[in-house]
Length: 502
Ligand SMILES: *Cc1c(COP(=O)(O)O)cnc(C)c1O
Image 1: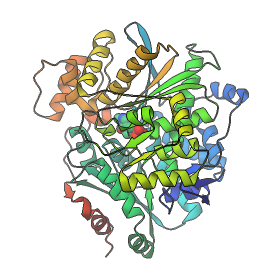
Image 2: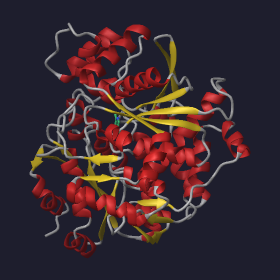
Image 3: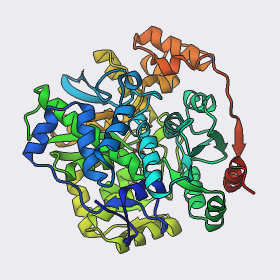
Image 4: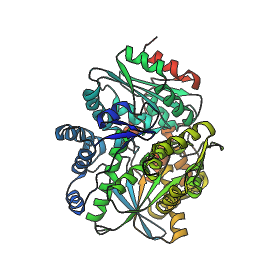
């Protein structure tokens, strides 16, 4: 299987190259040239398998330049019971809301308590093997722009991994106190964390720019280094996410919730469009998905896009209680548009260029009509998010985080509007304890808010009885290692400084 750039179909690479490089030289994203398509027999064999077995099969079909042993090694090291708390790293919990049954796919049982672990626990293994195949002996410099969760998950995945260095940028006022504390206390000899005076989009644009600035790239090359990415622009981030949708479907069949072949809906709290895009790839492989329900917070650029076909980032940027979705430029939409335009690199390039220069583009009628048929977009604000957390908690004693609540809220809107009762899987993307303050305010609006983050965690535990994940509880007495803050314009110099390159 080969991969090409969304903005230049003639730029063709192996999967190892796509993963090492992260992003194409032309600024496009790498996409598989065709998806494997699974027939009934393949799905039936996956039904009998466990999570790791399913992962190995799917990885093998996309990473054809890896040996079976290499893939097995990556999967076995990543999805351990020790790291994810059980043999199934992505369990489905059922809870009741207004009498209906919700299937909540909990993706946050990994070491940093957000769904990013599902990909970032395996990416370092995939990347080290990819580097060996493509740039043996070089050090990969992982630049990360984070809205909170990617940063910590990437740091945890890459800490002390040979031949890698990692630098994380986060928006100074754009992450939760727990997220900030998680990052600033990170251990490891190859890690660096820095806040920027801007929002996530500034961080992401800054990182993308450094990646493609030739004098910086040359300086790295002179020092035997190369840039790579742990953001979801890297194919190695998306592939692991396909696995849990297919695995969740198998688990639903095995649990008797659906029959083999039945369609499901998937509901995804969306920021950079990576998670929901993975569901789309699963669908391309034959997984029966009826609707992709794309849930946003007040930064509802995707809701508008799905309704109108016009993507317009020229709008107010809201800082919300679901900060990992505070994004106006959803990078991975580019991959969907490439597919929906019939693999047109020229159309994709034109839209992405318009987005860069005017902050706006409008897709063709044919793309609009597919989007209309397959996707549903909705959003809710902070108030509605909190009400949804409270409702789930009051009705079924289920405590969810702010991002998951946005998804549940939009799912309710969808059912109300369409009457569609197709069994649905709702992606739950973070532990509620990463956003304790907002969740506490939601479940108990009259509670007095404690002064410190960990007192808030304790209080939330007292009220809810929901278990505090050990990796978060363990941070209580840790002191911060990092406190750097820099201007957006200075990110390039910060990187060179951190790498001790002149
Ligand atoms: C990253 C993140 C999202 C958004 O996922 P995308 O793949 O960027 O759409 C949603 N919720 C949480 C908790 C996240 O960390």
